[in-house]
Amino acid sequence: PRIGLKLANDSNGEGVLIAEVAPNSDAAGKGLASGDVILQVDGKPVSSAEQVVESLKTVQDKGRKAVLLLVKSGDETRSVPVRFSVVG
Image (cartoon, rainbow, N blue to C red; front, side):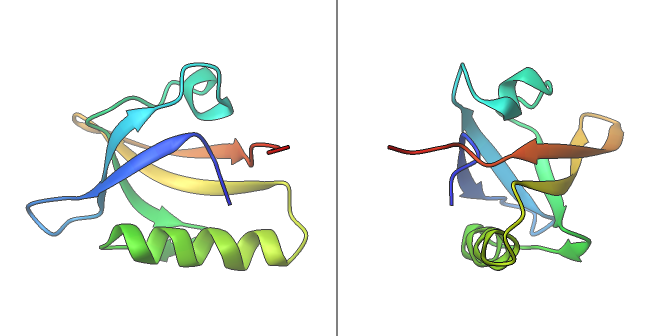
């Protein structure tokens, strides 16, 4: 599943670092940026890029077209709904 993000495991173990955001993705449109940290995917805490990918697969396998991310940007933490990218 794709949501327009490249991930890196965060060095402090809290969440997963967003390394890059695809410029025309829904994630970019929602204001996500490199340096932000994903804390939860669909209400479940994540601590590795692999956990994010597995959680995204689970959500997409349920037939949903978007996923709710809990994201930390600087001192602000917010919930962001992000649509899956259509690949084809």
